[in-house]
Length: 306
Image (cartoon, rainbow, N blue to C red; front, side):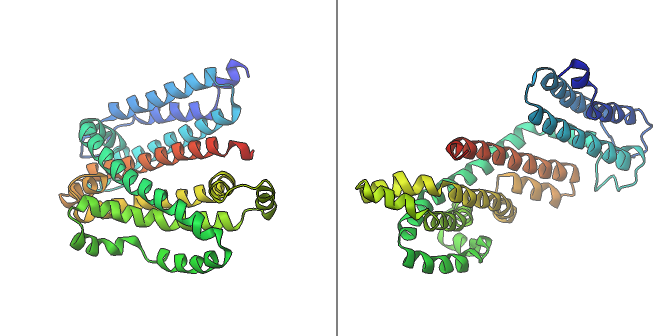
């Protein structure tokens, strides 16, 4: 790929357009922090140019360019609707530069709350996987019990875990433990169902071959059936992880004293919508980052299926 082809992309033209828009006169009555927005855009463009210059993977490069282009368009439209033409209420919809500036100001506070939310999610998620996978293996091993358990799982998984919060508050010592309990329930049922589905769907030829080799029952479960069920298990884990973040944020908005849900709820109660939008965007980025890393782990562990 030539240097000209690497650098002359529509994404770079969108970056230039975004920067040019910032030179339009501001009509907002609030501070818009244009310099913060330009600095942020330049940082993204520097990363894109660096990757464009050295990347040999055309698919990954195209994905990065598409994401950067989407960000540039979003920031441009956001700037025009707020800072430049004041179409949106500047109290409810602050300019993008102001949100970026607020993130920089609150980075320590946001970092603390993100770590708190991630810690709670990780505890509930790991506990649920540690219980659901072995239980799903043993129950799914019996076709008769597994079929009955499938309907029981559908019943309990249809109940939103957040409705258990009042009982959790009454029975558990802290709200942090209640949040872990909610994450546990949100993750357990999808992982349990995915594990049973994976076990019940294992090719009978694989099991028969293992029996011919006189494989013991523990080896059959953990060395034969578990690897063959991993794809369905990871599907359940992905579902549980996605739901966990939604429920955790909701739980933190109800009664927590830390976490990103608490951050958003606290400042929205005071009408500080700049921090509210900042918190919402941070939650989105954190969920995307965690999902991306989890998918990388999944692809690594299932690389043999390729």
